[in-house]
Length: 245
Image 1 (cartoon, one colour):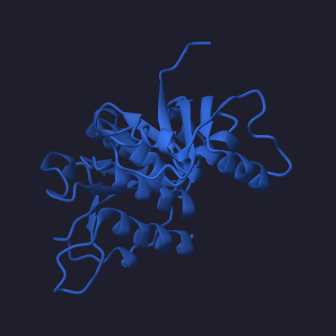
Image 2 (cartoon, helix red, strand yellow):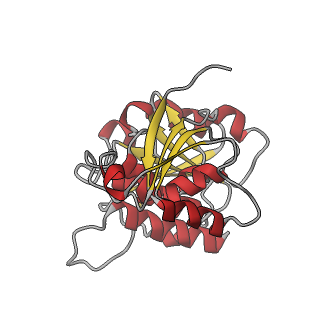
């Protein structure tokens, strides 16, 4: 078995969901006495800490793992390995009615984490991100995703445009979300295979990437308000599509 690189995550939901995921290798875990009791209380029928190196620490000792990203550990820190990167080509084989979300130059770990939480909550089939832009070892990402990193397929690709082109050839429609569109996304019948493409908060969709979209759509909102945070926008869209399906 090849050794994967390891990194630290923090926060109750992030750590407990990593422990619950049979695909995820947890190398060691750092807990307060109280958080250990909580793990057993929340999982009475399964000992999640079995065969694990558990180290007991004070809250203050755990603080040093979170200082760089300024997040609350809630008494839970773990060292984990990356999951296997799923293969997009394999995943879409013999499947229909798939909905993917794709991020174009979105890099803020808090926003990406919140978006992952919404995507998992509303049954989005996977997230497509550019490998180089994805903060895959960010504690803030894991904390914001609130355990949902374990529940969503994340496809890290080397080139977004090539991937969109490939998916178009495989009967996916690409919908680019942009404030300049006249078409409200709720007018779309969301059946078949679709990709929801969101651009960075500052610049929106990359001009070059726009060439690979089939339709431009927007979220209709109060004209006096410039825009919504990307994770809020995405949650609205995911919820609507999930309801429709």
